[in-house]
Each structure stands twice: as C-alpha cells, then as structure tokens.
Image 1 (cartoon, helix red, strand yellow):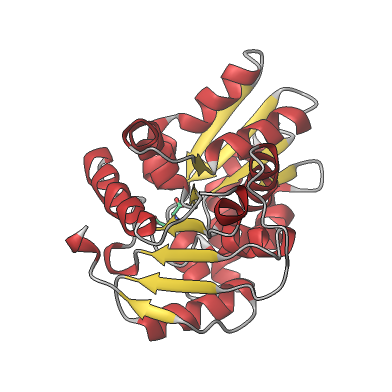
Image 2 (cartoon, helix red, strand yellow; image 1 turned 180 degrees about the vertical axis):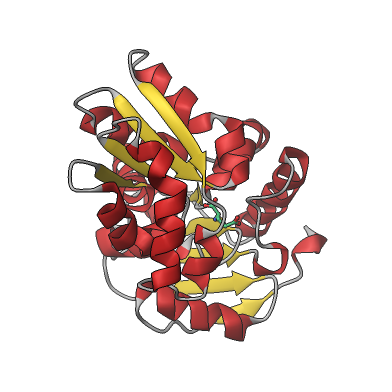
Length: 273
Ligand code: DGL
C-alpha cells in the first residue's frame, strides 16, 4: 500500500456510547481533513460500572468492527475502556490504539504547580488506578486524589448541564477534593467536559480543569504526523457513525454533546465480532 493510500484511510474511534463524541469533536476540529469511523456501543452502555473482563471483551469487538473499515489508527475514546482494556488490546491487535488516559495524565503533570492533582471518573476508571499510575510514571512526586462521580454521566446525557440538582450533586461529590488543596483536576470521563462549567465553579478558580478529549486530539495529531499518516487534503471528508442500538436516541444526545446534528448513523450487531 502506498503512503497516500495509508494517509487516506479513516481514523477509527470507539466509545461506550455517545461520550466519545467529545473526543471525536475535538479530533474533527483539530484535524478537519481526516475521515472518521465512529462506533458508539449504546446497546451495552454504560461501561463504567462493569468488570474488567467484560469491558475488555467489548473493546475487542469494537476494535474488530473498526478494523473491518480499514482504519489507520484507533482511539479508545472512553476512559473506562482505556483504563481497563487498553494494555490488553494494544498487545492483541496489530494497529496503533491510543487511549484517553495517557494524554490527560501528561497534561496534568505539566499543569500542576503544587504537585497535587485530582482525578474524577467512573467507578471502573477510578478503581483501575490508571490515571494515578500514569501520573506517577511521569512524576513520582505528585500526589493524586481520585474520586468516582458516577452520577455525572446520566446528568450529562440528560442535558442536566446548568440545573440546580447538578450543582448540588457536584458540591457533594467534590467537597473531598476541595479539602485536599489540589490545583489541577482531570475530567477523567468523556461526559464530564459537558459539566465543565459547574465543576469549575464548584472547585473554584485556583483549580485548572484538564479536558482529556482536547488532550487526546492533540496527541492523535502528533502521533499521525510523526508516522506520516496525516491525510494531506481537507476536501471530501466523510464521517460515518455506527451504533449498537437505536440510532435516534444517539443523534439526539449527540446534538446535546457537540451542538450540531450528524447524519450517516447505522445500527450494527456488534455481537457478531
Ligand atoms: N465513556 C465512559 C467513560 O469515559 C463514560 C460512560 C460509561 O460509563 O460508559 O468512562
């Protein structure tokens, strides 16, 4: 295959549902010339409360599906899948697979001034300790404070962005992190960037929020450039979306997530993979 053919292949993105669209949207913004194939496992969402074995099994099928589309690079655009399955699937498949943990962790290491970093995410992500390990691998001096905030996911999906109930829940969850004097907080879940404003207000302006979606898009750009895999043109770009259950609900929630409509949503039977 020529370099041109490789560059023109799509980037594959998978997530447990709609959450990975926060990552896809950043990739589209930063790399407007890239074709994208997105798979949202809405039929088996959420991943965040499931066991490691189950999430690894799901991630394998998601990747096999994307490979069928001739992708050149895969993004595990789900913190829970990145946290518990990435290491395993990176060994099993012969393609570069980037997760969202490493980029977020690196950004936190660069950002913190007092070496005290908070991580919020799903139960699977927090229990895996992946962010804390990735941060300590970069700088062993940094103290990491991790907290699962499972209610943030349904709040974001339901569009409870600026509701009183969301603020009360955020205040209740985050008080333990306020008490430990962090100066940096990683939004370690694809859904949390939607709640950036309320989380930021509750944490106060001395705490910088790290958005893993933005950091991951930057890392994708740099890896593709390094491997000479960036598509040279921005013309005739196609974005294709696949889901494992009702496409209508997916498109509604996507509108909430990225503020615009998407077409080209096809339902697939992911259990075949
Ligand atoms: N995408 C998941 C994550 O980033 C959140 C939703 C879920 O639990 O599946 O952890």
